[in-house]
Image (cartoon, rainbow, N blue to C red; front, top):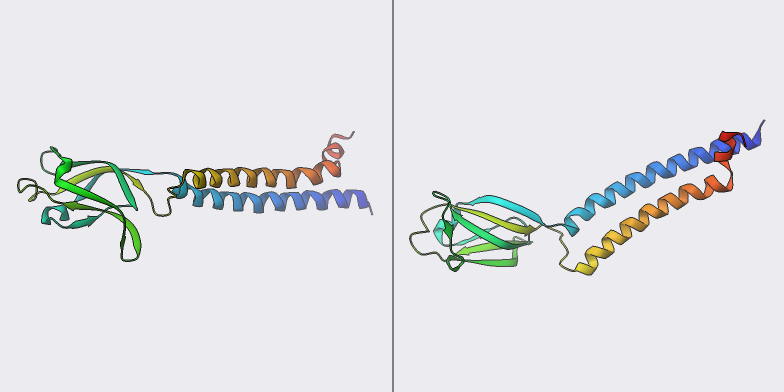
Length: 163
């Protein structure tokens, strides 16, 4: 038996398994990091309950850069006719709400709302968002190091080239 060749094949299998498991964990981590770091632009979200002068829940936990249009003729409704409340707990979930306090000429119509939303799980701390990205980068580098060290120690690459 050729023990050197068997050791090389075993090392290749170990590196392949490490690469597959590492890639699966890296992709899973990256997908969970996306809502933690990125805001979402919501365009023309129809808010039909705003015409009752009550609070209406919006998507996400906070809303900014809001523009409200009248649903019938696309006229912009002035900001004095509504109030945005961010980080409100509704049914156990953080959400943004809009409270209509509009003049009577705006109330009988549905509103179209465009805004920038912080999705559920979004971190308001810039430092935490940066650390999440740095952790992901170092995780990828760690996978690369775990795969490269056994390869260079056993000179597997050299055995394929014949040198």
